[in-house]
Length: 430
Ligand code: CA
Image (cartoon, rainbow, N blue to C red; front, side, top):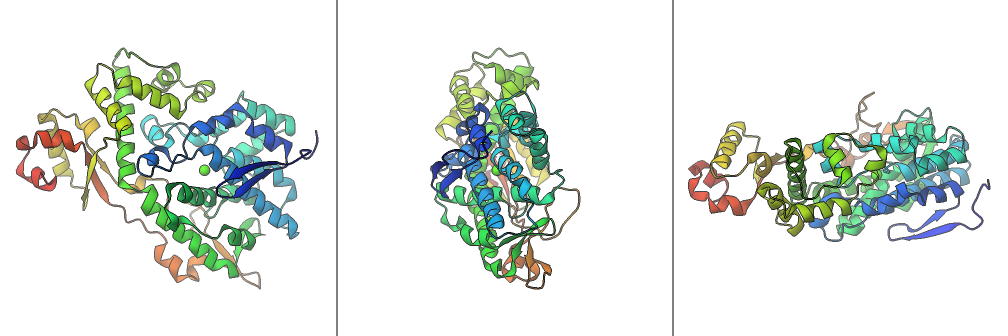
């Protein structure tokens, strides 16, 4: 097997300008059906209903994460940093490319309803009977196992894990820039080139040269901005709630023996909890949206109404709630039933804290999901956690000022406003 492609391959990319592939294994992985499937899964799920430009795919993001990783490694190698283990190049590039290969359609919403886990699917795809697995095995004995352990964060060399998964990893740097570009929310921009120049391999980890602190501040500010402007956007949350209600309803119908006019085998297995890797790989957003188009005509009035809402972007209205008022919510559920609305599908209280994003947490906890902090490296080889030196970062670290919102179909509630209690009418501005 040749060590490099005869001629390097180049993908045009709006964020990185170009993505360069020199390694034949990476090139073969890109051309597997499992990786090509990512073209049919949007990076930001339902966000396109809020920001119409947000149609970019997990395919483009995955190439971007690969490209950032490649640039970081090249910088280490060009500068001859001996702390970078050069034999880890291929594992790192493949892990970066494949880290999202297990994402399904509208991943986050689906995971909430069906309890699936994209990280587990990623490892199942890398280790299972797939093209990806064959390409990796042919390249190097044990490569699939090494890559899946990088993705599970159990790999023996933490520096490789931190390239793909840390507080300042290739994954986050790519999605912030890419999501900013495609949503048109420009506060999300930061100087990637500068950050790539100040990263250093040090004591088995990746740290930042102290002079690069301001570039990292801009990166964390971008995270802060994107968090509030894009990822927590209440209209996006509303579309996720309608989407989750569709899947909750479809599964409940399926469980009760309802005969669907249209139900493709992978969706049936999803409802039954019997999905195989092969079936999982058939799921994509085109299939899900085709199902919604068909379910719009189902006999069940709730399912057809929810599908119509999602496809026509007739989403739920939201009102803020200072805190979770359980007694009012219980009453609201009763009132919903009284006006003929099933609160299991037409009422949702949402708090942003259950989203998989955070701005920055300086404290390190071992074992949990928390990732090591960003460390600054000074001239004398000393390390300092970044918020100890930066006031800007101190002020945004650990911020979680999530707001509660109540979501509901305003049209249906307004029709029946007379039957609601005075308190509810007042709170819902009816
Ligand atoms: Ca990712």
